[in-house]
Image 1 (cartoon, helix red, strand yellow):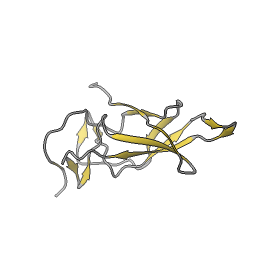
Image 2 (cartoon, rainbow, N blue to C red; image 1 turned 30 degrees about the vertical axis):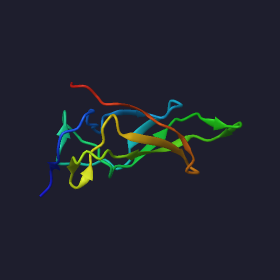
Image 3 (cartoon, rainbow, N blue to C red; image 1 turned 90 degrees about the vertical axis):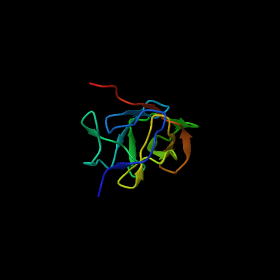
Amino acid sequence: MTGISGGYTSGSLLGEDAVISCPHGGRATTATPSNGPVLLNGVPVLTGAHAHVVAGCPHTADGVPSPCVTVRFAADDTGITVDGAPVLLDTSAAQCFSAASVAQGPPFVQARSER
């Protein structure tokens, strides 16, 4: 059986249409889209099982391009899961990383409002 389970939490659920950007202005998108069983305003809910890639990050370190390329979320311990994976909230801890796996700061995350 698939679906959502668990208890109550604070924070807004993130759907695949959430606006996620690196601290340097790059835009993150879901690299592993799903046709998940739980929808939020018609789009699948994001979980800790989703990967996120960043495009358009202009960051440099000492004059050398070092763009953010991924965002990694640490799913909250809310007990709420979708198909066994914890849901992501707009309050979930996350970090942007370069291709060399160097942490480059937390992303800006905004859950989409109702349409």
